[in-house]
Structure formats: C-alpha cells, structure tokens
Image 1 (cartoon, helix red, strand yellow):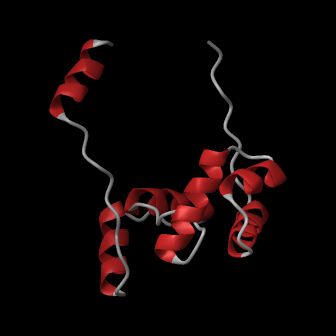
Image 2: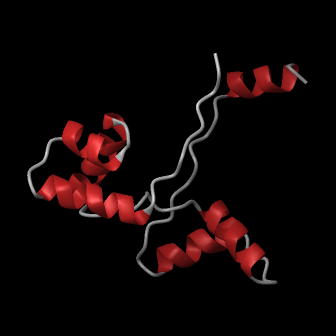
Length: 110
C-alpha cells in the first residue's frame, strides 16, 4: 500500500472553509468546493468552533527554540522559552511523554 502524501492546508483555504461554514454550507459541500477531504474540513471547522480561530495549536518550547536558533544566531533553551512565555501570561505547551515500553522497543530495534 502506498503512503499518502499530505498537503498542508494554506491560510487562504482555512479562511475559505470557515467562511463557507459560516454561510451554512455542510462539510461535504465545503470539501467538494475546496478540494479537500471531509475529515480535513471537519477538523478545521471544529478547531474554529472551539477556539474561534482556524490556526494550529501553539508550538512547544522546543519547536520555538529551534526556530529562534535557525532564524538568528541566538541559542535559547526550551526551558527558557517556556519560562518567558509563562511569565508573559501565555501558555507554554510541553510535548507528551513517550511511555517507557515504547522507548525500549525503539532502543531494541537498533
């Protein structure tokens, strides 16, 4: 079975999906109009309903730290990013921890 290639949804597509949803169109009609699957449309509409925005979830401290390092010559630890975000009243997301069993399986496979 061939692996599916995922296309990221552009901001324009997200705005169009939200606009069509607000006009009362069904997810199936929106999916056909935009050329995306119904599940993609459903996920974007659900995100819009819950947060009022179609943007993705906030990034983790590690992702923000990597972006800062690549964009500038400043190296900042993910702990520092999390601390500064919390100090500013923003949420600092942490990645979910992997179970010990999963780490053993991965380590044993190498």
